[in-house]
Length: 182
Image (tube, rainbow, N blue to C red; front, top):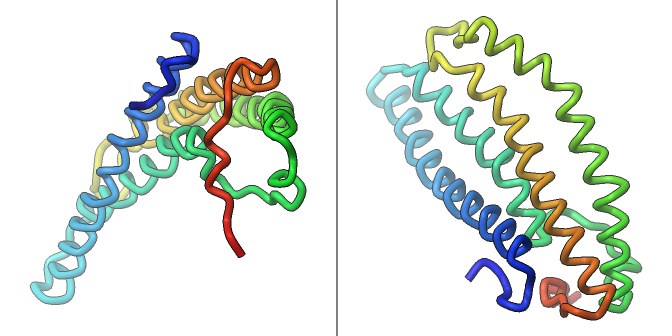
């Protein structure tokens, strides 16, 4: 189950989308490990080098990082300095998360989108390829930057909705029950 049945339909849909992308992209980690192992075995034991296989590991790593960012946000898995945060009430944490989303996450995501748009567009204009004869889809790799921003912004909408419901007392937040024990 990717969302709480008490939540509004749009919030459930956004969370399910993020959860689905995250779960799907997580499988790339296993595939990436297998291919990296094969690259090492081929290079050091058989004497064969494959640029395409090496680049595919880089592409998968980029996909895991960029497409998994919204999933990590949804699961509250990003690094947080919570000296005070963990002592706040549920509503206090919701305020911090809401303000952080409004004044940090959304502006940074929009800055990334605006500053990288021409970079991605110019890559598409020339259908950029690997200079080493590897994967002929560098333009697709660069497009992941904008996809990451889109997924982060969608999850930001879900975060704003969820935090607003918590502040208004219409939803309980169970996501912060994973506090570290020292």
